[in-house]
Length: 300
Image 1 (cartoon, one colour):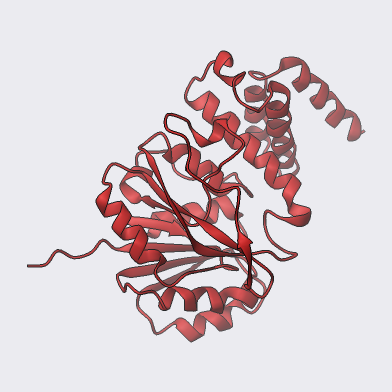
Image 2 (tube, helix red, strand yellow):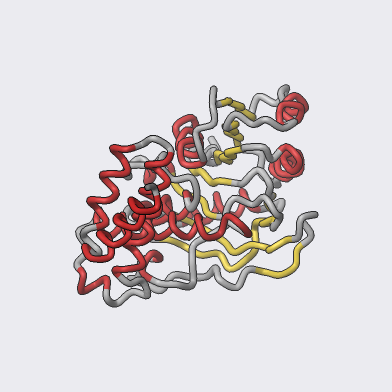
């Protein structure tokens, strides 16, 4: 009896991307392999996304779940993985798309490399109409023995896929992240097994004004990325001597944590904000105190 190919769970967290969503879903349905499911969690969208869902409702391979209220990207992506049934998972943003043989290639590479945690490719950078402009030059092979959080480039990025068994060996995606959610995921997965790079673009990354990590959102996304790096260091008891070999200073990491703490405080998550403030003290007590005092002064 011929063995069944692993199931690939394509994970989509959607919030108000109905304008692009049909193109995203169509790219998955056009794949050269058919052993996939789509797990789409809608984060209480207020646009016309529901109209798109109706068009695909008859396909039993597509699971659509809606949050009762807006919970943020981290919470929604975590929920995607919790619902997924696939041996292999990969996130596709609702405003992006994938090339037609993307899933077939990723399944093959995972099968040939059972110990690998993440298999990822590079991607096309596209305009708002999803027309490719160039291939990303910042994605590439992570040097042997190096973790991606400790270097500026190259990075792990789209299209990144991971074994669900490896994910279950981590604490999972943190629900507090509103941006840089994928970075938090990659940094955790790197400690469960090697990563493998495919030097071929398998993903269409759309650049547009409302992108979650570009334009006006880029600065906030960077703060969450710094928080993710800091959490790796704390989680794995990485010494300050190792930290000094990375391109990230104590001060920079401290500021990243505290800015996220301030956002959490404004959202009413006081316990979480306090916990983050305490964690920031590891990287730079003086910087932490200065920024906390400034934040206090700004409120009176």
